Image (cartoon, rainbow, N blue to C red):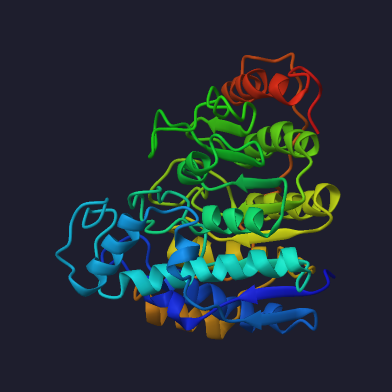
Length: 394
């Protein structure tokens, strides 16, 4: 069991609500916490739950422009405000938008501070992971970019090298942009090909700016990629670059919109495959970063079928005791899910029944589109990190 784990939560996270018809429904957070509680994950003796404060302007401005923060504040009082990416279909304005967004940032920054300061070995904010927000505008359901701000805070506190691994189905463009010219931060994103999905970035050739070559790693996988191929690709790239980079702390964005039933994307992972990726990142945090692991949620729009189960597995992994895949979902949780999402059919098990097995990548076969994607990434970035692109994968 992991020691000194903090779970960051505040009911105020549920106020990050972009509207009744918006895919990013806060019910996914409510149902995740309810499922984790009913399964005893949050009652483990090594777990401390803590509540954050809203990030102040100085913290927000570690990434965002002063004018943009002012615009979000203005929009909180006047929902007719436009510009800066606000009041678009993806990012509608709602009353309290600044406070709700700043609270999410405060949560992820608190997680980072606790891990860096030694108060927690691992810390998780499932409400975080809003990785698309840019320095001067909202984007892709994201108002403030909490993982990028948390990384900036780690640097401010004295971290010399931070690694960010993003397994959301969408490219982690906002975090990559924030540190494009910063050799102290490695950004790794494993996502659906930008040829077929928002935000249209994250090609293998994106490897960091002139001042930071090799600091960005992008593994873009074709639509239809399932557990076995996704995990083969993941293991063929991520551990090698983490080992080469030598980070002091790992920050993970664990969007679960890679699932086969997610309505906004076209990868085909199972909850079991996602669970395997969390276990790998946990292992790598200990192997490469002395166990320092800051974890966030991210995307995920299978509100009843996927998010609660995936992130309860994530919470269980972070807190050191993975749940058995065959664990039944509690009846009380299923009743709550039906009440919150009338007409839904909540899953009865924590597994999709998938094996999540995979075989290591080898450089000899280029007939498979996933293997070609792996080789493209390795060819683009491995030499910049002193690695052999054709060496065998993990």
